[in-house]
Image: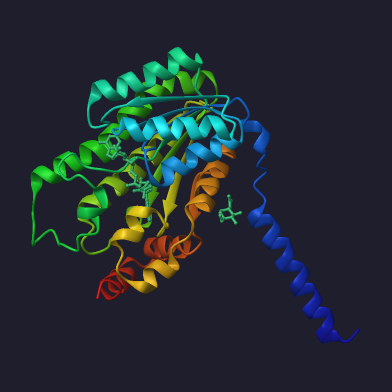
Length: 298
Ligand SMILES: NC(=O)c1ccc[n+]([C@@H]2O[C@H](COP(=O)([O-])OP(=O)(O)OC[C@H]3O[C@@H](n4cnc5c(N)ncnc54)[C@H](OP(=O)(O)O)[C@@H]3O)[C@@H](O)[C@H]2O)c1
Ligand SMILES: *[C@@H]1O[C@H](CO)[C@@H](O)[C@H](O)[C@H]1NC(C)=O
């Protein structure tokens, strides 16, 4: 074999090894059979799809959102797909009593809790969350502080509230907290002020909670999920840019990537892959990323 061929072969072997290392996460689908899971924001989008994927894996699920008619349909489909149990709580996560009712119901139905998957996104001020998030309005054009307070209550405070209520149960079961964030929770973009405030806030709170739990030697994992553009109905309806839609990845693959990350106690999940270099570059060279963010928005 020529020297060149040897080098080529070694590089190939090395790449395969790195590829296997990167993709190997020790995920065992069987670990989810009978696992108890609370998922928020399940009347549409990624939350609804996660409910179906957990169901296929034989989990016991409790789902939440405000639209009860939709939750009934999702519960029925989850049961038909193989969920050992499927329950719902219809409620507004912006209300403390509805968060309490959610975790209380999980306690009553399951007697324990393995997973808390925090996924909902919305606002009490506008009917459809993407409407404002994707409106294209800058803060300067529409500095609506009442909207901001409500948005943080629904998308940041409620996540903290639900996790706090669930933590005693999760500690007993060496459980998992999964927090759905966004590239906008790692990188600032124009027109995303409120959304970024909530998602950066989730990173700050839950990354701190993670190290607190580590320090206290509590075996509860915290997985932060950094999502790019996912092909949910909301995104398809509102995204006008052809190029952005092309970059969007399927909801079912995303739901499975989140479930894998939670089950394998990953610190963070990046889906799709391009969110990782952006987040990493932003941490290293924030000024360069500011310029890219300004250009992307044009
Ligand atoms: N799709 C993307 O491209 C994308 C990109 C990055 C990050 N993400 C993140 O992924 C997660 C899921 O997003 P998605 O695209 O699947 O959103 P979606 O389709 O709009 O679903 C949002 C869910 O949250 C529920 N919800 C909204 N306000 C609520 C409230 N006050 N109380 C309780 N439930 C409420 C909605 O149900 P009701 O209206 O029935 O209450 C719905 O089930 C979010 O955390 C989002 O930030 C998504
Ligand atoms: C997602 O859906 C597509 C098309 O329906 C299917 O081919 C693919 O196998 C699914 N992937 C997962 C992870 O469920």
